Length: 179
Image 1 (spheres, rainbow, N blue to C red):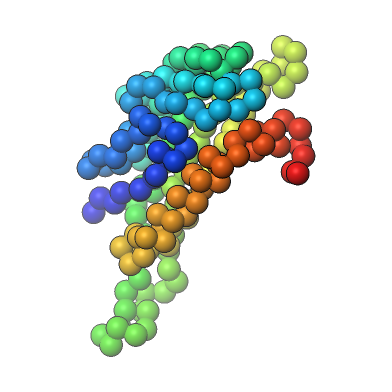
Image 2 (cartoon, rainbow, N blue to C red; image 1 turned 90 degrees about the vertical axis):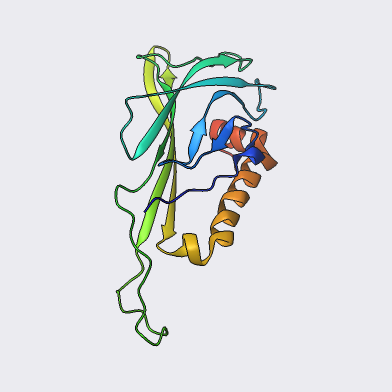
């Protein structure tokens, strides 16, 4: 049974994301309008899908970076890409007894999805390193059907939080200050 992960990324200004009825619902095509941050008031990224990605994940390379002042696009020695991972086998919804009041299948399993962004950076002059963002979403098996509005609410809130104040969020990563 195919399942879909709903991602409301229009709230984070990624206008080129589309949902499709296929094995993986997220598709990135063409350009992505990034959120304005310090030194990049109107960043634009161009993504190209990796056709050799596995059956349970997709990867898009960032092949062009425009107006992001100093940021570089993907290369072998300085990678820049986005991945979406899904479970290889989805855990089933809990099963109830004949009365419908008691779960008989044991603890509720979780279907884990990951969004990863990998970017080559310099940790110091001529010292390359990798910056990794990894968002992990653990959706209780069955919640996609029994409580889809609340599953969607989590993604909506996440998109809103990122979109609310991206400048100060990124400054926290640069300065280490939370306030």
